[in-house]
Length: 135
Image (cartoon, rainbow, N blue to C red; front, side):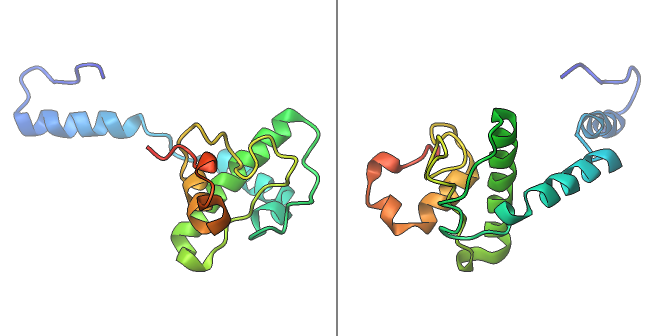
């Protein structure tokens, strides 16, 4: 990060300036990004509301970009719902045709959705080869 120290400022003033600079670099959802997110949730409503093995025989979108979009959306929803509902939530497994089945995202890349799936399915934990990256 660039030096944000103000010449002649007190230590406290510089600390406040540093914090303001850091906060200005955070991505704050805009109304447009919120609308985009809501549109994606509507588009993939059946996918993000599913639990367990409901989607295993579903057909994935044909376009790679839509599969990527869907996988990331469902993965983020898995993390959010797992945090909200705890052990009563059974994350949805992707269709068997998904390239990363039984995960939505590459299991060699750390993502909390993969951990949530791993921890929710005893049959996965019985096969250590299916263990995703969690560190």
